[in-house]
Length: 174
Image 1 (cartoon, one colour):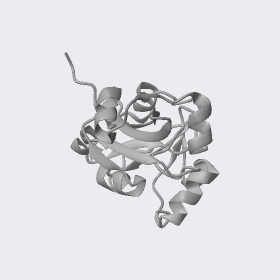
Image 2 (spheres, one colour):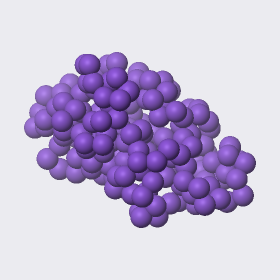
Image 3 (cartoon, one colour):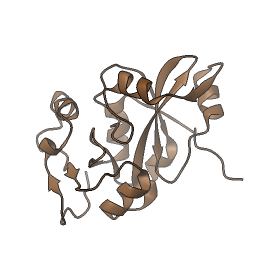
Image 4 (cartoon, rainbow, N blue to C red):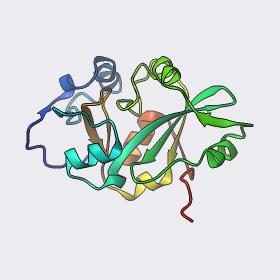
């Protein structure tokens, strides 16, 4: 795993992560050595805020977005520079209808608030799709369970730990 420079006004280590996410890292055997979880004094709720705080490209941020496919939650991992196309998610899943999940459903399903949802370590297991665009980078950064924390990981490793299926669900540019 490659990491970016971790100098600056932040703290590192899995203790900076949300306790549920830190436990998920341990359960997956990712605590020796742990990913370098970075905590920032200001929230990094959006991909743009996270990229600015880390000093990486927007597309190196891995957004964890929850949708409802025929009423069932599905997690979509998307690069920070792109948007999810719900129609492509619907087609990939063979669902009738796909909509953005409400904040309550996100918290109930994952155990985390919007802006801090990590790609794995959720309260309940749901289907996970990862957009192929994440694979163009050596390292991506994802939320570590809070709007103030992120961690780096190789995309293939992150996708494997999330139990994700790689798909093309990014909104096409016009």
